[in-house]
Image (cartoon, rainbow, N blue to C red; front, side):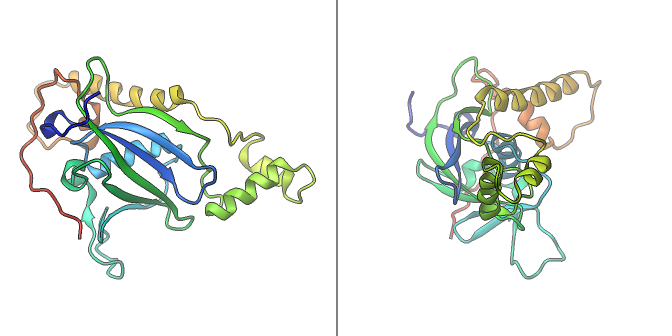
Length: 236
């Protein structure tokens, strides 16, 4: 598959997401349109990693922060709204990196790296997960340290917290499991549903597309979607 840079309207980014601090690494490989906003990438990462989207998050690229700005939070500094910034604005080439933090309490830090920039493949619907390893941590388990303490407890019947942790997780947790099909099944029906809803609307008034409307598009080579030119953001 070609990896040279082409017009952004036809670019597909192959990105790898690694949960930092895990050993062996918990990671996913995704194919996503370059025209996704960072907010939409957040939605995709939540599904791919198995998170439940119940905590705050942010992206960091260079010295810049991207997320959902809180006007009452003046201690964290300026935050650019993630729904106004596209991947192609901030990650321009293979090797470009970002950091994605989810849940400021447990502080799950993910490395996001652009591996390749590809042309779209006929018949594929994006975003698409193509590979990955290991089950992601359960929500609210206490960060990296808490996650490995949890694994130790459920593996050892003699551990003081063995029964408590098994009951907390629902009786079973397989850290080795990862289902590519399950991830894509969670991604695609959501977007097909949005397409069906959009198709049944009658003479809607023109309005700015929502993030789910954007994700619902197939991003196939035949889509003909031509985004407006935008000024790229250069990380500090």
